[in-house]
Image 1 (cartoon, rainbow, N blue to C red):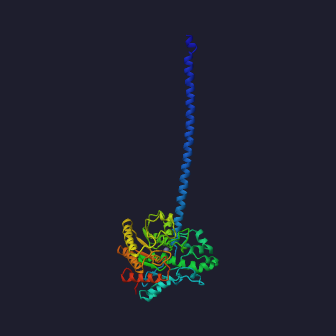
Image 2 (cartoon, protein in one colour):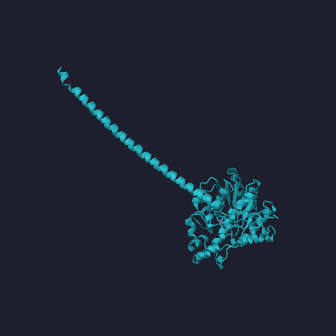
Amino acid sequence: MSCRVIPSSTDFTRNLYTATLVCVISFATFQVSQSLYRHILRNSRNRHRIMSSSSASSSSKNDAESLRCNRILSSKLYLDVPTSKVPLIYSPTYDISFLGVEKLHPFDSSKWGRICGFLIAARVLDKKCIVEPLEASKNDLLVVHTEQYLNSLKNSTKVAEIIEVPPVALFPNCLLQQKVLYPFRNQVGGTILAAKLAKERGWAINVGGGFHHCSGGKGGGFCAYADISLCIHFAFVRLNISRVMIIDLDAHQGNGHEMDFARDSRVYILDMFNPEIYPFDYEARRYIDQKVEVVSGTTTNVYLKKLEEALEVAIGTFDPELIVYNAGTDILDGDSLGRLKISPDGITTRDEKVFSFARERNIPIVMLTSGGYMKSSARVIADSIVNLSKKRLIDTTKP
Ligand SMILES: [Zn+2]
């Protein structure tokens, strides 16, 4: 009875516990749900932020790519070349000379004209058959270069640093534009056009170009414009080519195109270079697909054997639709910059091996003359081109 009127302390306590427990659980549930809600909200905001930033970056990447594409499509550099011409590209505008300052440089700055002179004298080439390119415009250069880099060339000190002739810093920039950069821009036009001609005729030689130390944002080592990178980007868009092999046999490492095509699987880079000389670009070395080091003093037979092996490895790994051959002659014995000991006949054999490699497989090949500016270089290059013609690897005797 009494026990019915007044609940037992046990029941009371139990009820109190139950009420408290319900309250605690409700409160805890509320807290958990609140914190869960905040967590979900935070995550969703983050996800949204990440998604919108990645879509912004991919959209700005797409914008840059379509701008590049438009620049290439509106370029005038891909000239229609009549079949009466030979795909050997040169213009007297290539050669550099002004006020004798070029003599301060160890380079033969008129080697390009001298190569053609030797070929004409050897009757391997008719002057009328030479293809003259156009100068690469600012619009063309912006395909690879930044506006900031091109503006930096308006500073004479910067140009002097790139071409490694300190006194040039004292000249007004308009003179450097006209006497140094204008010849370079014509050579760039030649390299770009060479890919089109190589696709049409199987081969093309630009008697200049090969500025392999210059990348989109940085020049150096006598290289003010990245003609190799430009040539390849034009080929991607205008020639419907998607796999390019660069065979860089200049004595120096080709750090410019290596930086421009870092992690780009469309480009395979075989670089044979002396690791003991300029540019010591260890970052760019990471982007070489096949690195073949030839130390100072390497002789002809050792060099050619390494080249043969490297070409076999390259073709076993990559199936190119275009080869860009950077045929620097600073590997010549006596070249103080390259420090290798390759004979003039060794250069001829090297070029023959690379051309045979491409021609036997029907892969269009572009050759650039690149580094090697000793007085004897022009003759060695001309002799090698004569040999290519004799071996019928190229045909320079079009009507
Ligand atoms: Zn070189």
